Image 1: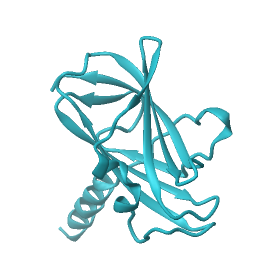
Image 2: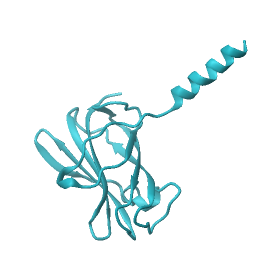
Image 3: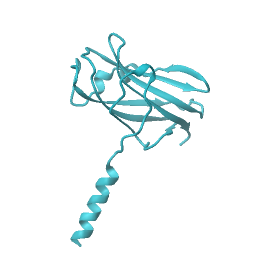
Length: 153
């Protein structure tokens, strides 16, 4: 009985771990996030359910000191690249740091989260999403790109 209990605990623990997603690097050699986790996605393309929020967690090392941080998201679908406007409260990346606060220091290990809305009006298309964190001087601190597709629930 004891072995069964240990096995059950080990299986539950393994099942609750979130695996880091292998993502693409961004254009122009911008710094890539150390790890990226996207809720419900273990490999690309990630399915983005219309009418839901997609949770992301990034781990990265700050390449330089910065006072403020902003999320910038760009989506490319059907050959068209356009900014993906986040609500202001979600775009303010300083609000979404775990174990850190702005300003941040060069070399600091950062964990940040993002909750990205997938509106019910979005078309059912495949796309590439590029997520960046930039500072007050528009310098990129970290970036990653992911293949995705919008789906219905």
